[in-house]
Structures are given as C-alpha cells and as structure tokens.
Length: 363
Image 1 (tube, rainbow, N blue to C red):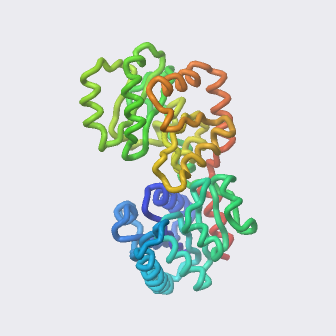
Image 2: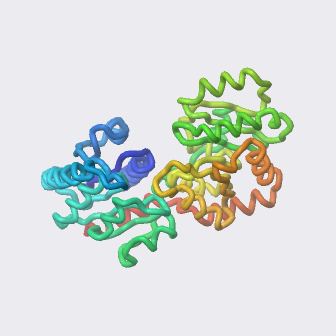
C-alpha cells in the first residue's frame, strides 16, 4: 500500500499524522509513505526526523478580511495543485489523507481531481476553512468530536477519533511518576499550557504557590521553555513548597499522563484526545487566541458531559484555579465520576479506526 499524508502548520495537525503513520507501519511492513508539506512549516523538520520521505509545496492561508494577499494565495493554490499532481502521478498512491492546515488544500484537492481515494481528518469540534472546502471533493471526512458532524455531508462523515489517543494507551504511569519524583499513593495534578506554555496559566499558578504548601496532593507545573527562566526567577523570590515540581517541558508525556489524577490545560484537540483515551478528569482553559474560538468548542464537548470543568482565561486566577483543583482532587466521588465520563468520550483505538477507513476507500 502507498499512502500520501499531508498536514502542517501546527503540531496538532502533524502529530496525529505521525501517530497514524506509526499505526500503519505496525500493521504493514511493506507500506510506503510520502509526506507533502511546506518548506517553512514545522512539519518539515518533524517529519524528516521521523525518517519519512518529505516533499514540499508553497501555500499560504486566506486572510479573513479582503486583501490583495488573497489573490496571491489563489495563485499559490493553483500552482500547489499543479505541483501536487506531479508528485502524486510520480508516487502513485493508493490513498491520500489530509490531517489539517493550509497545505492539505492543494494536495487533497489534486488527489480528488486525479481520482485517487482521499480523506480529510478534522481534529476539532469546529472545522477549519480548508477541511470545509475539501469535504465537497473527498471520499470520507473523519472526525474526532461528534459536534463536528453537522458541518460536513452526512454520507461522508465517520467518527474515528484522533490517532494520538492510541499512543498513550499502554503508557507506563508508574514510570512517569518516577521520572518526575512524584510520590506513589499521593494524588497529583499536571498543569501545562501547551508546548510553548501559556502566560495566563503561568500567572495563575504563581499566585497560588504559597497556598499549595497546605495541600495533600502534588503538582507538576510545566511552564513552557520560553517562560521557564522568567518563572523560576519569580519562584526564587518566594518560598516554593516541596509538593510542586516545575519543569520547562516534558518529553515523556504519555507516561506522565498515565500516572496523574487530574490535568489542567488548554483545550487543543490532541490534548483532549489523550485525556479522554486515559479517562482523565480535567480543568480546561481554552486559548482565546485561536481561530473562531475553536478551543472553547472543543472544551464544551467534555464539560457538557461532566468530564471536565471549563474555566475561561478571563475568569482565571490563582484562587479560582486552586478552588477548582480542590473540588476535584479532594472529593473522591467527583474525581471518579469525572474520570468515568472522560473515559466514555475517549476513542483509544482511533489510529486503527482511521486506518481501517483508509483501507476501505482504497480498495
């Protein structure tokens, strides 16, 4: 089987693609891949480090306001379609999948026009412009949240979940706790704002640090590498309790997630896929800086089912966050109920489900 994968711009589009690729490799040792992305995007370095053949096209996104730049984007799109067709004709894939980002537009559209079976994977509850456009041309639209179904043709939609969910199943929670120096038998909470961190979350944690010394649970606080130095300078000026562990970044996230009891985070699609696959209760603080406020829509897909507490950044401060953490961690019944609700929303075999859809349409 030969597969073309396209996705870029953010890790939320790239890492699910890599998780899917890993699943396909496990099931078919003869499978061949070509990843089409952009030269300047995050995907180039990440994909090449994973040892996957990579080719690039040039593409930019449309401005939401009227702009001359949109004319340039149309020209780049048409050239991207033409370049993609050349790559596809040379590689001769059995199926093409787009996992999000502007780069998918020309690649998946070219595949559809060439009659190559194609699929788009929408990670968010509120779909982006590119996938809405491509839905008219592809064979299937794979979604991660049932809330996204109404935006696509009903006969094309299939709920598969996010392949990243499959990568946390089987993770070693004990190993994760040991790697951070967490105490066995004690409740713990992981607080992080994504790979780059989030200033608002960092500020709230700094505000509540003095009160943490009285808590009978442990806190792992991930600042993000760009904020770490500044945070540590502030920490040094106060008395930091022994039950908080501060890190700039966590490299073994699946193992850590498998070992904790509660997570405080943004509401990116990949994080929510991992959280629900493991059945973790969460406090979600959606980023207000994302397109169409889609993180809040993502978060509501959990909070509406009592699997998470939705806390707006506007309402966020140390006192409020600490009270919410106490409400969950110090109430065993609430903790269990939220964990069960989260687990019900999870799709731990998402990578297999998506692979099965690809095999089906490529026959």
